Image (cartoon, rainbow, N blue to C red; front, side, top):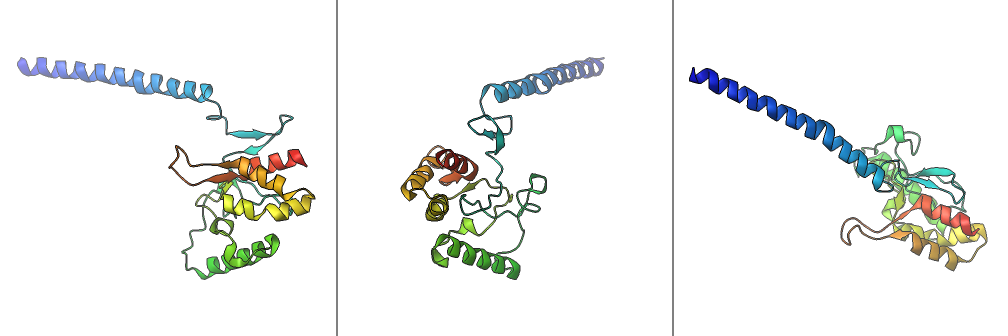
Length: 195
């Protein structure tokens, strides 16, 4: 008799626990996450970036290609045919892989010639893809290296373009997490707004 009562009591405790956890984790937690996603700006709708007229031109979280000397260029992409969000991924090549070494050397030579610097001055993020292949940011060094080319192609003052880079540079998160970075899409939008 004691064993039956104990078993029934333990079963009732288990059922109550199951019901409480179902409500907490199956209802309250998802509703709370949904509410935070709707209340905090830029957290749930893809971090869209829009022009001043309101047209969506991309996401602040996914890089995209910019062609032409009048634009700041992003990091190389290894995602599909380039910045394909459905094919996110790096090259998975070792640092001493001959194909990667050759690709980096070719990129370095091309960027050095385009930006008027020596090959040794080209930053690493300018010639290597990120782990996702979709990195929307570049280093401030790489952005500053492109200032002269972009200003010349647009026929505007390099100091103005340099100021845009400074304004677009984001510091470390909380002052110590990550590295300073520049979002290429946002920088190019601000560049477009000045001419």
